[in-house]
Length: 228
Image (cartoon, rainbow, N blue to C red):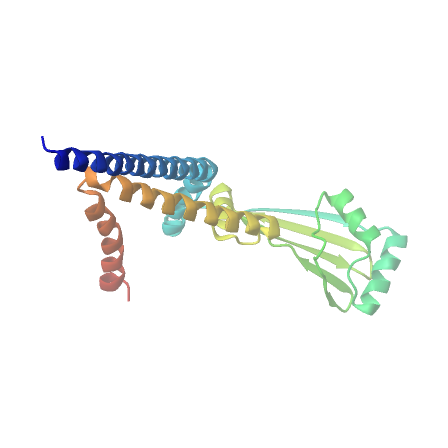
């Protein structure tokens, strides 16, 4: 071997070592990225699992709501407001103000009714009416400010109706609405990390992108061809 060839090999050796080191760093970065994506994927899956099952099942029940029988159960309670509290209610009626706290507390204790803090009555001559909508049913409360009679009626349409209303966020309050928003973000994280994992492994699974494309094209065609 000539002197020039030996010098060429010596010069090429650091370049080869640098290339191997660079490839190793890239492999380590890829492995670290994959571990992070897997971590986010399984964490979001664990958090959203029960919620996704609930929303998948209630998606079916909502889609076939007309075929699922439901017999509403109506219950009614009555009570008579004490004279001192009736005077407070009459004073609130004169100003069309919310029901005084002592009146609300008495109703809650006597009828076992939880009145929302923001529930404002609809005042009409001699009556305060509170609409108390709830998931899976309905309710209302009426207070006769002339004689103090309190009537509370509740309608319950069953478990399926209750779960359907949770799905829609109907009459569920602020806490459940926050849960829906956070749950939706968790589902987005789950889907996006799943898509990244599909891309990372797609070279070994040739059916990956045809199946992803089918998931897009099938509902799109159904919407264009059969929904008018």
